[in-house]
Length: 226
Image (cartoon, rainbow, N blue to C red; front, side, top):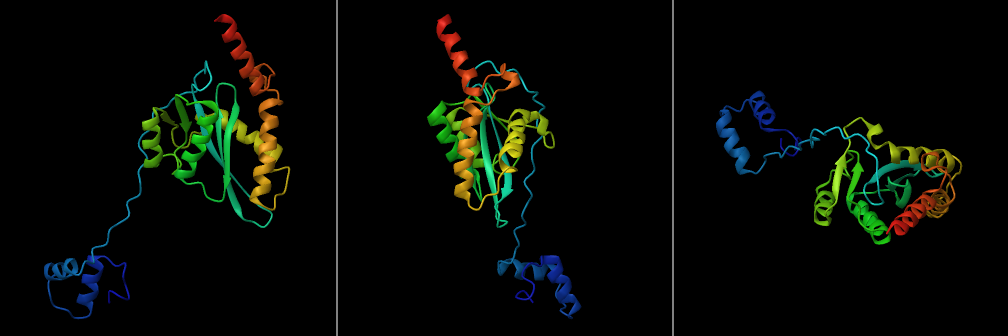
């Protein structure tokens, strides 16, 4: 019976035995059930803790707050892939990205390491409640690095609207504009598009400067004041 129904729990097995005429009471059946090591460990759905509403605040300096988010698309052959974007909310600069068919928390950490090597460490990172972001590995890594993870409330993507706005631009101007055959094509052309976005694309919220121009202007003013 167990071989035919390996996922049946104790009470279902007990009831099946009684239907077949087995007379032992449920306590005896349970002792045998435990002795044979048949206890089924139930998978418990991970519950997302309540998230406090944290409205978008004005960012005063670089690396004060980054934000991360995922996008997804498919190659010409239908193979799905994902993109992880890491942005500095101060100047809307896309610091780093990753393109793969799968992006678990270990890949998220590797991407953040590259971003930090290039740009320095952020004080905080705003993320949604995706499984890669609520993972224990990322939580521990950020704690060790002294980086605060700020989670948006479930179902409230506007609380991460700065990187969401970038995703919208990338979707319209890049992903929807080309057909890709391989992941290498996506990675190569994405880096070219992001380089133009960071260095040449004017942003109304940045006084019609590009992200890098805005950052350079901030650094110039800061050095002058010092």
